[in-house]
Image 1: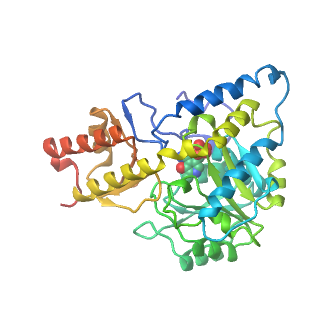
Image 2: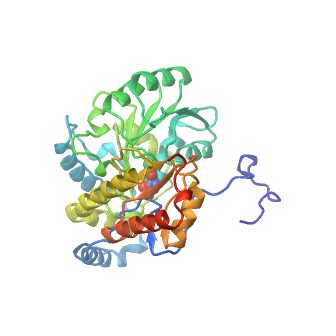
Image 3: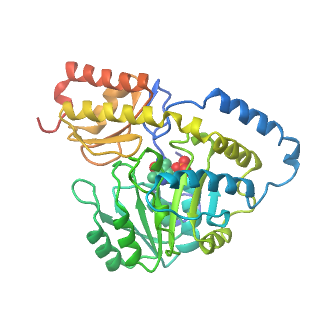
Length: 377
Ligand code: PMP
């Protein structure tokens, strides 16, 4: 990056680095939590036809209220709720959508954060939560998870009461740890908070089926917001579509900060088509969970600490040097993520072939450079 110090840039941006993992063109990319499988041909065909019907109308601005997309999201989420414990009657007025859940989160923080306000999160967690917060001029306060990266209701309640934030971020399953929290933890945060409680459920579709969504807590909790995305299980990271579910009043507040026509017509039509084919797009979730299990078991056998994951990635610890391991794997054509937690790294569940390549590379490192792997033997 060039030197921006000579520009009249905001003083809080000086010295900062842009967010983002190294984008390297290697054969096996297991570093940014995408769905490893491409979009099935039946769906790409349907997408092609759908976009075709919208091209001539691109002289007009898109539907600012993305009406059809909201209805599609309600239909999809109603199906999800059938599997969850408890239920919630969703209506389109409770749905928001934007270009990825990053933009959804940014709308929420623009509306409820800003200068003089505070957001609380429980780290390690998704690194964009603090960046989105401070980007609006709000203050970020980090509380810690326990040694296993878990959270319990009592400690979350105490921390929320102590900090008295305007916004609380909870992430479940949590990135980068993969661990989940129970509804009791979310309810405890809410009860001790006067502000907005955001539950970031980007990886929800990879959870154990018995784990209910925070959506089931929405009834009677007008300050609770659940954020989700089509970037992960839905295999549509390139589409850029995230959404939130909350009381209609919260959604009204988000309208105040969004840019006019923020969701392009093409995005809306592609997202609707993807949702029409939800079963096909989610069809590889079980295979990815199998890959996750294979990776977790192998890492544990090798002596790494492995954290229980409800997502499409595995966090592992007891690594002698994450930077060395990252390089050793890269030398073998495999990209994982050094997430900056000492002695830890994160790896995605890939396709069967990618997962096997990762496991074979690990075996090779064990055979050729075993001393570089583990901190404690
Ligand atoms: N939340 C979490 C926890 C994430 O890990 C990510 C992506 N890494 C996002 C939100 C944002 O994803 P997107 O903008 O693609 O929806």
